[in-house]
Amino acid sequence: MPARKDLSLKSLEMFEISARHPSLQSAADAAGLSVSTMSHHLHVLENHLGVPLFDHSRRPMVLTATGQSFLRNIEPALIALRAATAEAASGEPATARHLRLGSIEDFDSDIIPGLAVHLSRRMPQCDFTYHSDASRAIVEMLRKRELDIGLVATPQDRPEGLSCHPVLRDPFVMVMPAQSTLAPEDLVRGETDLPFLRFTTGQIIAQQIEAQLKRMKYTLPNRFECGNNQTLMAMVSVGAGWTITTPLLFARARQFHSHLKMQPFPGRAFARELSLISTPDCANSVRGIIEAKLRQMLADHAILPVLEKAPWLADSFRLLGGMSDPAEVDETEETES
Image (cartoon, rainbow, N blue to C red; front, side):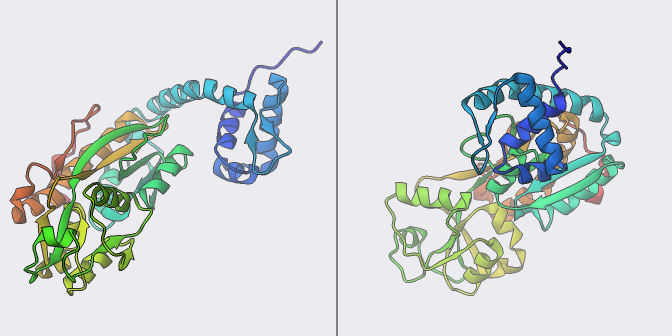
């Protein structure tokens, strides 16, 4: 009887990727392999175990009960292995080779460009990929290991296998036309003719705002929805309505500030939280560099300028927590950014 081959780590990794995707084609694309190669790895694994892990008669692919149990058992080991490998390969950031970074568009105009310059200096041999999208999409890409680290609105349900590091508390505020004399309390009660301009339904920020209005038993007509903060600020600046947003988003609309007025949200305060979420493939040393520079830039380019105009936000618009693995920011680069 021929000797049984050892279980292949590659086959285990390809099984894990396949379990996260609806088709063999999408799994193969994510792994950078051909469909036939991906299929070969899965068949080798099933033959080794002597049980089917997928119901091959169904489309999209569905794990069998055995496959689900097997996935639960191997994932912690694969996560630990990736973390150890990442630290061994990228313990020195200067030698890091690849980094896939994702972020919500809130940071596209100022924070991300400065962060990219900083990383290119600290990690000169690294190939960077940057992706901008909604928080949910970024988290899903992290879950599928299509990104290494992402800056997002903290999801309510923290995904398993990912590390979450809160960095900013961003409270909700009201923004109205600069010349408006309407009381914020009257606006949220819907007692004025000035319409409420909403973020698009489905966005995390929109759901947080709507949940708060519902808790306060306020129902506002749905007159205008937009997924882009800059568009909302432009609409408010010309007197088309008012909106609920955050100081970070308000800070991005500098060209409209002379025509806008930011006010505290009436009633019980609420806020969103922004976090760095990383996979085990992202070395702690690399994540530390990103977090240190991000905190410095948020303080210099977002928090301080806003607090100069709205000191009443000092206790609520602030950095969160500390860094478990801090990385120093070069003083020369601090002055250049």
